[in-house]
Length: 141
Image (tube, rainbow, N blue to C red; front, side, top):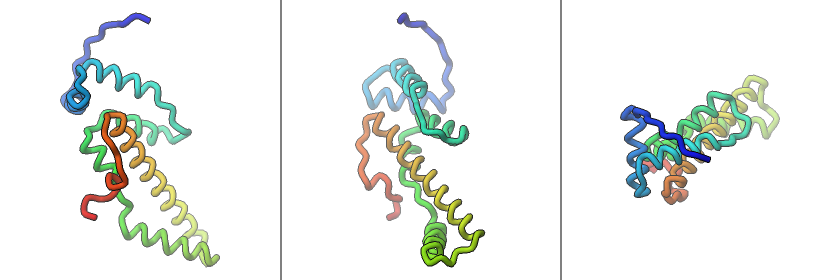
């Protein structure tokens, strides 16, 4: 396979994180751009809605700090409490159809959040960072 030279002008929003990655890996910006493009083009995601799939692919271009913030995201306590109450009602067989739909929506929201957190951590690991359980905990905890 032969190489094809391409000249591309990158906006600062793309150049800055690519430059950070290049510096962290002691590589050229050009090699990081090629590596990132190869990575994005090789992504095989489970069947997700196209908007969710596009969002996860875009994670490859986010800054390390933004990815760390995503990895630390938590479902608000009020929603966690609401989900627990609905789960309890479901377990006792006292849940209404409307409450069951609310529970389904909250569970799906939690699953999307978990996927975003895991994907952010995966991108950080690809960039050479070590990830621990503490990286998934909100900063104020």
